[in-house]
Length: 167
Image (cartoon, rainbow, N blue to C red; front, side):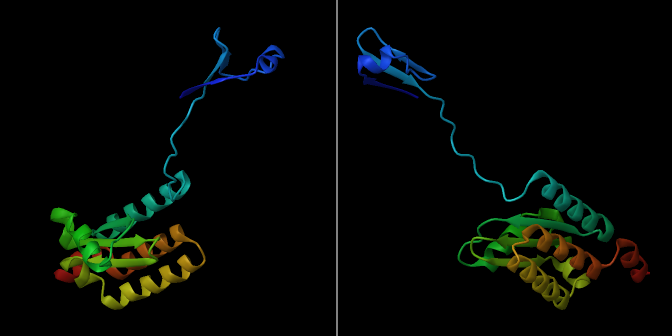
């Protein structure tokens, strides 16, 4: 971005031009400044994202279910929006477990698909929800999410246990 304005010659003659400033022959001061747009602030740092990714991976791998987290606005009907997000898991929706959190609204939803619901009872989801509330009240968003993933995965059991129970 550049701007131009008429400057008093005495200031220029005293050598007070700053970086990116130049006096034109017409007496106009030309100023160039580098402007960077504000970048959106991410809720988690690289280390926190790594911990969250590890928890998601371990939860999914150990249970055979598809765990996912959504962090963002859930709109007016939070449950309806969370269910719509859960359906985005496509062919994995039946085995899907979505933890949707809207920090700005101070709301969250846990949505389980048909198979996931069979393995993770409502009571386990309620316990994970209470754990998240306690962590969130302390300002620990990442710890609340990771704790909930672990609790839900523990409730689901391992995919090995599930395949043995069917036989």
